[in-house]
Length: 369
Image 1 (tube, rainbow, N blue to C red):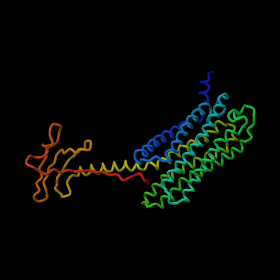
Image 2 (image 1 turned 180 degrees about the vertical axis):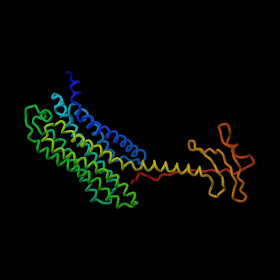
Image 3 (image 1 turned 135 degrees about the horizontal axis):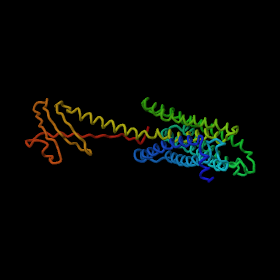
Image 4 (image 1 turned 90 degrees about the horizontal axis):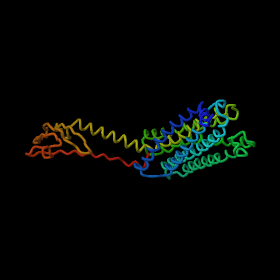
């Protein structure tokens, strides 16, 4: 049997589910990250640490996605009895690389959230800044430490992914304990960063509706914290499993959910300037069309007009009506088309030209919320 055929046979079980979930989250994260980059560059016009950290988290997520596809292709998330034993070393190696990428990605994702909160919080309270610094530094220390230590559980190192090799893995219990602590700390930090903004926003001079809305946006990160907690719980069940490849399925699913949700939930609040501009644009257009349909002027002249907008200009199609003001006799006008000149709009005996200027100004969204 050829290698391609047998490797394809190792793919199955929960593999399609794991890849499908990750692909859906990757697609959503990609769209939001593109919008976030546009908002930073074009609207807010600032490039700060939060966009750099989130890009690092996203790139590591892409690498993790690649190795997720590879490890499931060689048997991870499938039942052990349905996999080709020759493919298991490659499957476990790719799964370990996937784990390391997700751990590092979640760390950079938290740094992005902290950078946004530091920007909103400002320089007013040093204690709060130090708290956020502590969360960020401690998270990265634990994540980097775990990412390195996992490779030194066994002697030789290759025995980590090839159990058939002679050697020992005496450090597995220690690394497992460190991994559980790192996962628990990661979940706790996700929850902390989800609800910490409430303390910040409620001290700002904003309307309560705006405070509530911004708090809800950031509180979405609590879902990532729940995913981290579930993932950590599954780590403890791996050693007791007799179907190890299939037992890894919940672990990799919740790892990818946590990773992508951190990127997604940390991006949504930063898109507020884009949402504000969009809805204001829609509102202004709606109001302009409403004024045009209603007609009339501030003096109650009774003039009705129908106007069409083309590239910012106003075309006067027809004007008729009298005036309720004494001495004001308003003439009628002909419709414009491509063959007529501007002079044909009003009668040659004189009249009044009414000009309506629409000026829409957006307030500076660079300092949000």
